[in-house]
Length: 277
Image 1 (tube, rainbow, N blue to C red):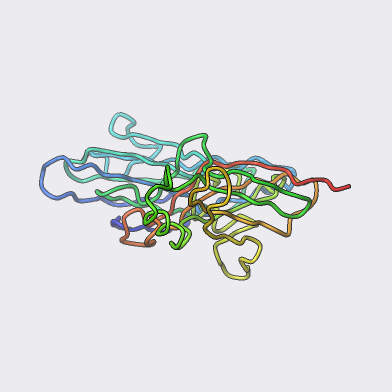
Image 2 (spheres, one colour):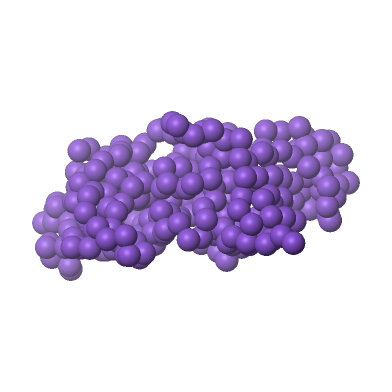
């Protein structure tokens, strides 16, 4: 399979990409990202931990055109995915060889599905490696919750900018899961993983509606500045939920051939609904 500037999706215990040819001999910064979209399920329903994370291997050596766990470690670098995501940046002077490997584990059965991308512009996929979820619980009751993002501007003195933000299409989406549901454990930093497996999804997919999450722009709250709000309903009383803010693509476009088109994910947050009277 030949790597391109878009994403490639594959399912196998071991996924290997051929060379990436750079232009000329000058150094080029190459952003390599891998996101796990699916992972092998546990054989036993008592197993709650996710399977081992995928491993990304990168080589620039003509003596190691098939990087992986059995190749010379001096001729390659290895990065283990975290939460189903990895970013590796390399100054490329020629061909770059990539291998993605899934560790065998007898407690799990099945295959991984992953998106693998390389770009000289910016990471195709992105995870905001920060403790800030950019998503704040405003209020909740036994069956619903209201969230705000950070404000999109720092002050409201520029009324033109204020009004432009208030009329824009909301840029973020939200995913959520009952915290006792382990389906997104191990892929919580991957946009395609959340899209495929989050039980509450604002993103439309086959067999699921999006009416459980309603979103829009608002200036209510302190500070009274443009921000995005999410109203999530259909929840269960006294239940803990994991919630994750994300962006489909780069806010203006998504998909193959788009810089940043693979989606962005923020740090997971948690809240608990009221138990009722």
